[in-house]
Length: 94
Image (cartoon, rainbow, N blue to C red; front, top):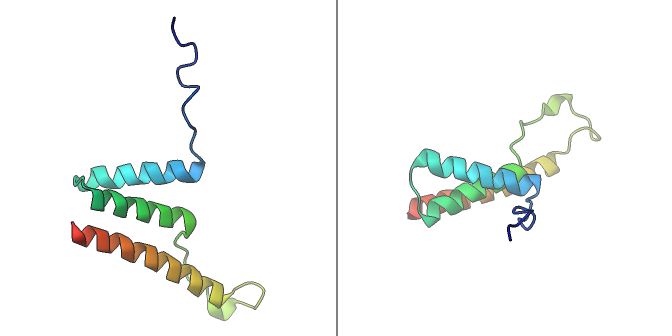
């Protein structure tokens, strides 16, 4: 008996998870280096883009309190930098 729904049991990823998977594969294939450190680093970079995406620094002179929050921006950039530092450390270890 054949399976009428061969893909019915496959788990569907969220758009964010699918983006991480796609970007990781893209980076690993572009580097042509396939080892655990590079795969993990690529996944971290892709996750950072999903969770803490790079944003341009606001024009602080044109901001008012309600429009721009320097503490939130700084915290955002610090978290992104920490994720990218881990990725760089993994790549350097390989």
